[in-house]
Image (spheres, rainbow, N blue to C red):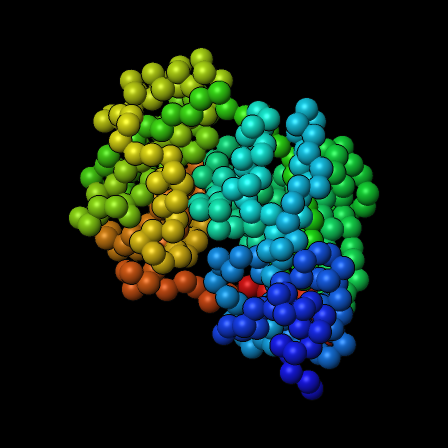
Length: 358
């Protein structure tokens, strides 16, 4: 087989190929992306889809990476209808800025949005600081256009909130981590923007007390955008419980007064929203997600981890982010022998050109 880099440069030009640990193809539009995938299918080349390469590189050996970073831009935006369609390589920070100016909110509000693309976020199944209120991002994907492993293009859903065009395959693609397709474009449901946001913080001596404070917030009728407990800042393992309120000014003010009155030690001005949002990136290593399945099981599930393990907990979801490398805790290996997943992978990618499902 011919040299991959040389072949990619014939397709995309020298500006469309980046040399590195893995040669990266950066097509400038959908047509170039499809031709690149067809090249891989024709020659049996394995490749990994990515955006800005901010996520961990998947295990395995690949001939090249395919980045959608140059396939960017808003395709359609209807502020009144609360819908947005954008190309996969559009940075989340740019989308957030665009919808905010028109009075809308885009979920997920992820950490470091300037370093992530819409396609990458959806492919990774990534949620953000606002997951307590809005849940996973896949619930708000209206439709997608994707390129399959043979270079064919498939569409699912549409650009409208009320749209019935067959199976919701776009929800299957969310979280598939590039194992089933390359996302080219996605349409998202938006929400009303916020007149005001307020972050309140309470301190706790240990994990158990932090969970108690978080439960106290959940019992109130304030409907926060986020409830997050963490010990990533304090070397002694002390905890902070953050409550982010967002919405109409009078509603946020009522919620602020309620939390300050009902949650022991709660105060404001202790933290910034950006620091709490980006806590998943601290202390420089990506944490391992750990979900207990049910809210009631979370305390017992986390009890198996030592008291000094660094973690971020969102009990209302429920999920915890464990900084395993720092504390000597390793993530569980992906489950093998999943017959349904194996059959799904084979149906979409019979030649195994894309990364394995994880």
